[in-house]
Length: 137
Image 1: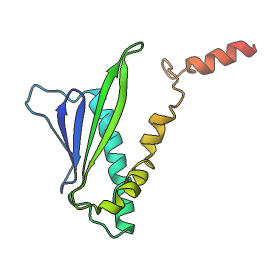
Image 2: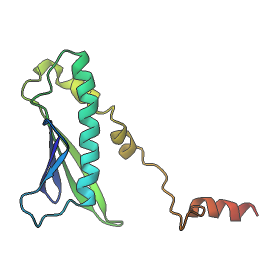
Image 3: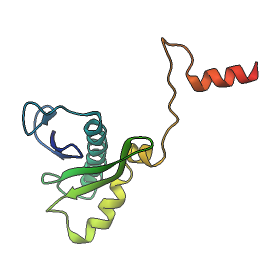
Image 4: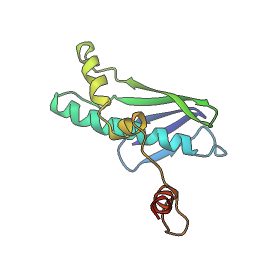
């Protein structure tokens, strides 16, 4: 698989032989945490679509997935994430089914139903756990 960093707010995943590679437009461009999160979403989506396509007897050889996003503030975060399935060989009558299948990705579900996140220092209880422990004492 190849991840191409398109910009500060977009990546492209393409199926390739061999190990995962991450390519940037120049050597001074770093792989940001935002691009990493988008890459996780793209690779999860690709995995789900690969499985769906195999059962539907469709090829994914020409499937590429782009992930684009915006930034929002208060707090600063990614927003308005959009996936583009660039799949020239996908029959037009299978587009809606492919879109539904792509939404079965676990990362997609995680982002649309965010988890609770706890932070601990040195392996101690998370702030959430500590708060509840202190509240019941």
